[in-house]
Length: 611
Image 1 (tube, rainbow, N blue to C red):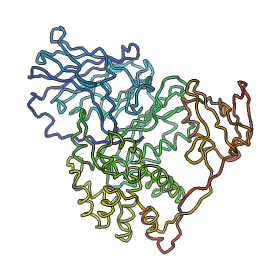
Image 2 (image 1 turned 60 degrees about the vertical axis):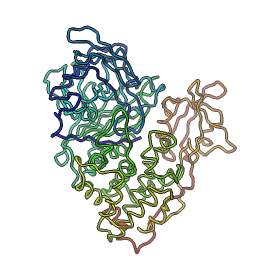
Image 3 (image 1 turned 120 degrees about the vertical axis):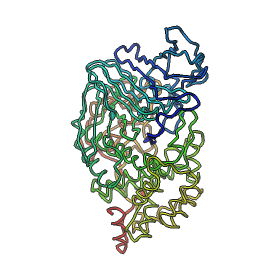
Image 4 (image 1 turned 90 degrees about the vertical axis):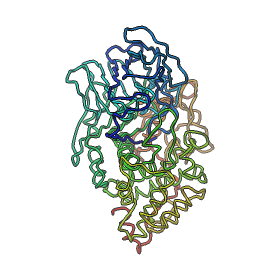
């Protein structure tokens, strides 16, 4: 999945005093990475001056961009409160994420331990880039919301966080370290939301930096077995991000941007397996399988990181009040995921054809895939209703459609604007105008956005939004694509050896985690060519062992296989190992695709893809 949210810092209200007695004092936090015990990190919090008889200390239920209830307080242990001379004060846990502290005016410090989420992922649904890793002496993924909470009424108080770490560790982040020592970092932020939006990855240093149009880019990599390095992935990332900056033009919201790449070792029993990324205003946290080849990893990073980087447009610059004033304990969702995630995903594909990174055929193939995937979702559920209720069923089951139908909504709006303006403007122009109207410090009301968009574009755009985004009507994609001369066609192409359409040709033994080939009346050509039979256990492919733990890697890597490539497959049949060698024979299948067919619309099509 790909995620999204906004950080807005109001410098004029950072130090405001509210009814809880919030003042210019700091909340001081110490995170101790030098004394990790049983994969747990000790955190100490020193509060500001509190004037109320009791106070609640919370951990987030949800953090910006996740669209799920993750309850980070569940991973906090041994929560203790002390007065100024070290005596215990009473603290009562009142829900999954909150502790009520009596005699609050006497609080001297709070201490607790943080348990990580990566090595217990089978017990929860926290998306890996949102979670935490604690691997003593090797890596700590310090997503700050997993380690640090907030006091009621003090979310706008300055935080000063000290991280004590081994000298061999280096913290990759967009924050500025105020401590020059080799075993301690000090970070100061204006408020809790800013702390949450600045992840830090600690490990032995492996990073590169480069500059694009006055923006400094940091790429840091943790590869447990040394399979990949920052230097190895940087050339492709630099090419991609340069193209993004060129595509965006006027958008330039940050001077430093960090990409923190955690590569999961799927040969280990317990490691991260939720692959994707979570964006922040000045950073992206990425989790991918280490076993990927460098070419495949580069392709995955290109799509995933480009999506996250485009969030600097929306919602980081253009956003509703629900996002600007994010409630970490009782979050309220905006209606406009079609824009935050959908338009972002559309840009992540459009810029690649616009900047010559992919061909026109490749772009149409991506659009066809999104249409196919969107058609497998609930196409009559109003998108705004799904978005506003995405934390609850049945709406959260449709969340992934933000990357499919959401992107297609962006495409259709782009095409309408191109058609009505004779190709001179598109959806990027609309987003630039919205950024001028609102910007990082001014949020819009959810219910007013459609009218504002209509006023900045055309009545036809407003009608589209009403009919297809807030209404239940499925979008006739072919009708919109025909406006730019693109029509549907049947395309014969290579499929995946382990999928027939959307249906897997393999299954898994949940007890042994073994991957088993499903019997079929007629096995596909890949299986036939190698002599693989239904019921065979796929143990290894090209010397890589595969089980349930890394089945994702098997399927994704096979998408890069080419007809005629040499292949070695170790199977287990009737309890006996066999090694099968031969050449890869990829199955073919008929797919619905698209091509440009109307020469009279060449100029409009070119302005859409290249304008």
